[in-house]
Image 1 (cartoon, rainbow, N blue to C red):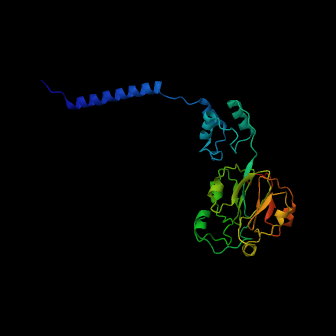
Image 2 (image 1 turned 135 degrees about the vertical axis):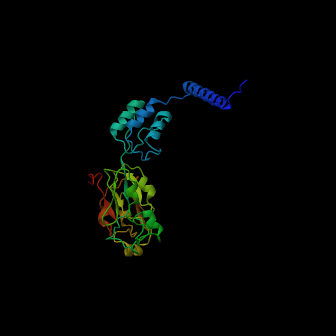
Image 3 (image 1 turned 180 degrees about the horizontal axis):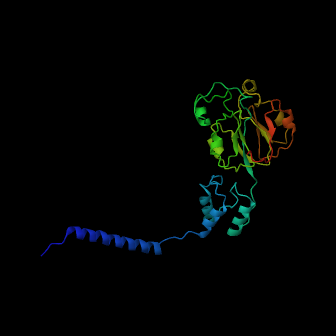
Length: 274
């Protein structure tokens, strides 16, 4: 009697196991699968697709899932306009008011013509890298270094680095995602309501005499603005004047009386820089 070929037996066992596993997977897919709510895909398509994380979620798909499954508010997307909100409202059967547009503002006015540079930096054109080299080349240890870290992470191209090495935000393009806030090594960027147009463009906590030596447009802590503003709209944090964006500030007196011109008014919207 001829013996059974072990190779044939092995192939038969492997083949049979494969067929059994395939059948088991087919049954599991048929009876154990969890179907995704089709509204998640629809909500993802409705959202802008910027995937900036400004809503607090990893991306538009993650936010859409939270809206549909967890009932998260539909007006958290800063990049979404009224049309997007209306579509989400119709789909979810809820009403929501569009949140006020918010924009980023770089709280520094000290470009290369107005602020002292301690040395010539020849390293990587990145603010974080420059900041790591002796605290940066700028005399003011609080000021904008101007090497574009914020500009490079902006998903909409809303931040421009001027010829005089200063980061400037174009409000019309800004979606307030906060990516620039996270990347700035000097915490100079703040997200504010677009209706707040008066800003103290300085974050230096140095005393007045030191500020004067380092920057022509720095806050010297004179307190004139705090004394002449709408109640509590500008407060002093040590020697630094700080705008409280939760309070209305409309008077131009604070701009006119600032001795160093570090308080400015910005436009609520600007045209595309291109």
